[in-house]
Each structure stands twice: as structure tokens, then as C-alpha cells.
Length: 420
Figure 1: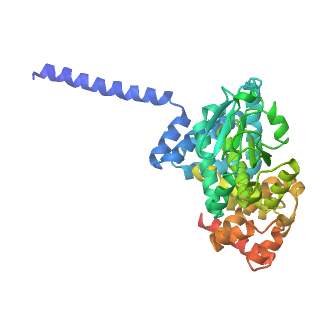
Figure 2: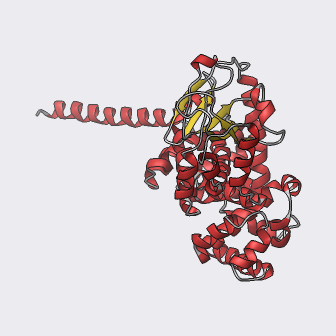
Figure 3: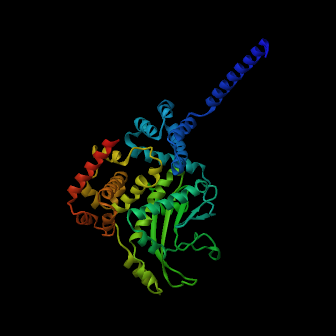
């Protein structure tokens, strides 16, 4: 190659390098900081499966809330995170001084947004099924978009809690006599039956049916009952019914779903359906007797504790461990006036629970986790099946006064926090 040609080639090569470098910088400048941060964390943490799915779904929603409610200068440090752990630490440093209150405000924000953007309930209902559930939602809702994630989350919650309590056989027994039909708004001749499935209604706003089934200041509700089939081969036989209603604004509502599915598993896991299946039932009186013969009342403590235990130790939080560990949050309760002593926590009624709902259920979840880790799930199952007097059951089954259990549990929490 001649000297002049070599100079031209070198000039062109240098030009190409400058062009590609400038082009790359231009492209990077057009990518939003959140997208860059998420891509970096996914690669460095090698996120896969449910972890990457939850990370992609929930992290943009969190930043949507932050951008709408905080100054950009407060949010900017988060974009430098190199891992999920570091992002969680930065988030806690900037916003996590009272993570319980933060979460409540965030749900209020998303409910208001969902209400503004939602069309009035049309009465039309889509339906999807999974192994143990049938889901109902309005067309065009966020629930329809997220339905595959909703289905997998519900099934995972059911399986993990059944295993946690070692009630797989009891749950399967109750599911065999479970009956669900499509919504009553459907024409009778077109209504479908879903034997063995728990009904889950996913509402985008509090209007319509949700207003009747979900209390103010609550995001979900679960109800149980029994019915006598009036047609078909099993006409006259008693069946259980289990229905979950939740407000589904976006993927953060999976936490509410996890909690309500836990209630359903607890009820079905301790119900004895033998009286419903012994003989055909002739009247509502027979149905009522058969239902209450199989019903075991559970304490609010176990219901709410297991509901949050699933969120923090098995489902939602397990796949998106961005917020502080539950033991850290409980330690903050202990160090403040919001801590509920264990004797009071286990004994109090539903009214007390509603007044102190987050401290109540999170403390209960932490205690349950401690008991499983220390004594195993068989003892927990015995306590679960003991009945409504949970304080007496706790002391009898764990062979210790409540004060001793509390002391050991709080020591466990302190040790867990030292590990971080």
C-alpha cells in the first residue's frame, strides 16, 4: 500500500472509531438511568427465573412512586447501585426509616392512580384457571396483563404454606369437596362449575362488588362457607366454598394475594369435611351442622402471622429482597413504642389487630419463622390445629412460658441482625 493510501486508511479508521464512540455515548445518553441500573444489576447478580421476573416487574413501579413523590436529588443515589443488595441498602438509607408507613403510602398512591385510570366495572368478566384456583377479572385491567404471574404466585403460595405447616394431605382432602361457580351475574344456563378450585376475584377499584366484599382500609378479603348442590350427579351433597377478593392495582398487589391465599390454606388445612361427604344433605339446617362440625376456629394471631410469613419468607419478598429483612423491621419495633409484647400479641382480638395491623402481623410472622427454624414444622402444625386459644397452645406445645419464648425469640432477632 502506498504512503498516501495508508494515511487515508488510517484517517478513515480513526474516523470510524470516533463515530462509533460518539454513537455509543449518544445511545447511552438516551437510555434512562433506571434502565441502565436494572440492566447492570441483572447482569452482575446473574438474576434468573422468578428473581429477574419480579425485579423487572416491581422495580420500575417502585421508582414510579418515588419519582411522583420525592425530589430527583433524593432518588439519584439509587441509580449507582451495583447489586440488589446495594440497591436495598441505598433505598433504606434514603427512604426506609419507617418501611411499614412507606408501604402503606405507596399502596394509597397506586389505588388513587388505578381509580383515575379505570373504566367503571362493565359486568363482563374474564376467567382463567390454574391447578387449584379460578381467577376472575375485568377485560383491560392490570390483572389481565399480569395473569400468568398471578397464577404462578397463587400456586406457589399454596404449595409453600401447605409444606410449611405439613398439611398437604388435609388440604387435598378439603379441596376435593370445594365448589366454585362462575359469577352470579352470568346467565344461569351459562354458569360454569369449577370443582376443587378456590375463587379469586381481582378488582381494579373499590367500585361494584369490591365495595361489598373488601373493608375500607383493607386491600383484600377471604370468605368461606358451604352449599348444597342443586343439580348434576352430586345433587344434594354438601360442598365447601372459598372466595378471595383483592384489589389488584399492579404487581405489588401480589403481596395482598399471597396473604389472602394463606388465609384460604389455613382454613382448608384445618377443616374436616367428613360430615359434608357422609350423606346427601336435606336442608340448610343439615348443611350448617355439617359445616360447623368440621370447622376449627383459628386465632387471629396465626391467621395474620401465617399470611405475612408467606409474603416475607416464601413468596413476594423472597423473590424481590429489596426492602429491609423482616427481623430488622421487628427490631425497629422493639426499639420503639410500637412493639407489642408477645403475651398481648397472641391473646388480642380482631379489633386490636385492625388497630395495629402491620406491627401485629409482621411480629407474628417473625415469631412463626423463629419457631420453624428452631423447633421444626411439626410442632407448628400441632399449635395450628390446637384451636382458638393460641396462648395456652403455644405454652403447652413448646413446653415453655410465654415470657421465655419471647426472650429467646428476641435474642434470635438480634443475632440475625448481627449477621447482616
